[in-house]
Image (cartoon, rainbow, N blue to C red; front, side, top):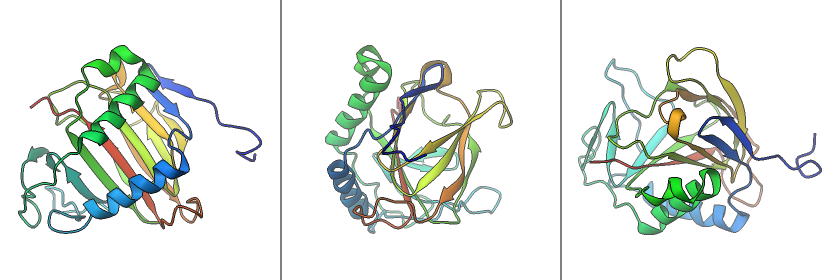
Length: 216
């Protein structure tokens, strides 16, 4: 059905996991995209992530605040050019706290001092396997913002990568927040729908901006 005729409702996918469609206005999406393009430039720019087993992730990544690599954090791009990680901007932390307040309430946002951003770029063939965001020492909610192509976001359970899980359609501008009992739920991206980005955005592919609190 046409999304313009039938607006998508806000949905609690699991306890503490909330999908808020169209959270970012088109202007905000363009501004965030512009910032992502600057962050993606070297040094400490967009890179291919290599796993300990010798494989590579199909989504490419750039980090802010703390550099993530499988499965730890560092202050430099230890698995890339070795440059210091780019700083995490205060305005992005404020955006994260506002996202949590809108999705889970003001109380959940009070202690969420965001200091990590993982920005993943997906082309038409990129995927993300089921995983947990478990390398931080904080249990503050994770904030996920989508730009560009629509994807299938698979949100599962805390015990296993297998079922039960729920497939959620994330479009450009959508917000997904998960915390509380869902903070360590497995999740992934099994599919990206190529060519579905808003025409006025100027992006081919999908960007996912994930905000976390390190607790370090």
